[in-house]
Image (cartoon, rainbow, N blue to C red; front, side, top):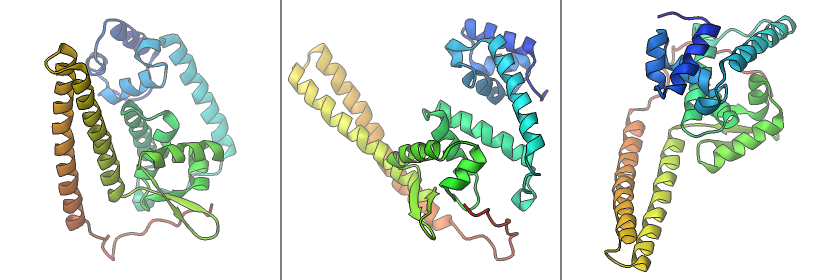
Length: 252
């Protein structure tokens, strides 16, 4: 399967595929490219309804020039822990961010969450996030506040006045339960609406069907979340004592 940057001709083919209503997977198959490559290309350049191949090509050329300019100014990047390939890690981080955006997150919260997910310590300070993502502290603050509201990250007080933002298995449980509780509220509300609209009326039947569906999903979600939580608690284990240690993080 070919790699490297998309050509202008490939971008034209992507635009034609989108206009024809093709799925990303089908467009990728015709280009002999990974689906993630096509998905990322479209999502970062206007989405399926706003994608323009000429603008996408120009944006790529501009990003390339900026990266080359920045590379001449920056020191050599720190080596990746555990002997990882820095380019492969960067590529995966970008792909993970794209998938998180497709799940509904805005770009900056997705970048923050993606970075936290692939950090061995599962926690970073605002300064560390800002330096890695090359954005302002205000952008990090806004993104982490949003993610905290969704129970996707947790804030912990570190040494001095610094806060650390943490992701762990318990947060997955909490965010899933929060989503299920929102469903529970919607079930209750739709059933109230069905009673108000009158039994056996078309609108009431529709609301009751919505309530039944969501009630089943919510009950299954609660049960699955509890089971998954117990499984993770039982199977989680600390790293072996002889495991290689990553280099220390830069101070924030």
